Amino acid sequence: MKTFELAGSKREGIGKKAAKAYRKESLVPCVLYGGKEVVHFTVTKDGIRKLIYTPEIFIVDLTVEGNKCKAILKDSQYHPVSDELLHVDFQQIFEDKPVTLEVPVVLEGLAQGVKDGGKLSLEIRKLKVKGLYKNFPEKLVINVENLGLGKTIQVGNLSFDNLELLNAKDNVVAAVKLTRAARGAAAKG
Image (cartoon, rainbow, N blue to C red):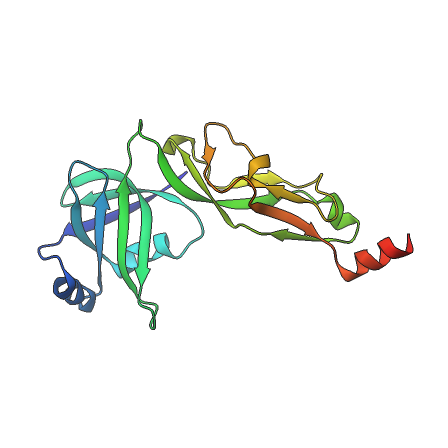
C-alpha cells in the first residue's frame, strides 16, 4: 500500500471557536485516535489535499511536533454549502491490531454477459474490509470473465487472503444487466 507523508502541529485550543480561527488561517483541524492518548493537531490545506481528494487509500506517516506514527484516514467532514474541508479524523494503526478500511474495487476481464450484449455494472465502488494493515491491497481486483447475462457477483461469493469482508453477504458488487438489444436477441432466439 502507498504511504503519504503528512506533518502537523499541535492545536492549543479545541472547540468551535478555535477551529474557526484555524480555518481562517487555511489550516484544517484534525484528530488522531487509537493511540495512548487523543492528539488534536492542524495541517495545511495544501498538505492534505492529495490525501483527501483521491480514490486511492494510503498509510499516512504522520509527524506531529516531532512524534511520528502510522495512521489511516478515518473520516473527513465538509461544509454543506461551500464543500470546504472542515475537519479530518485519523486512526493510529499498529502492526498487530486489525483495522477496518474501505478499499476500492476494480473489475478485471471481459464478462461473458457483455459478449452476449449485456452491460457490465459496478454496483459497489468500495468494500469495507477488516485485517492487519500490511495485508491490505491498494485495490480489490475481481475477475468477471465468467459472469453471464443477467448474473451478479455478491459479497458472499468473494474472498481475499487474510482479509474479512464486512459488507452484507447479499450486497451485489457487480452485475451484467440486460440491454434492450440483448432482450431483443433473446426473444428472437
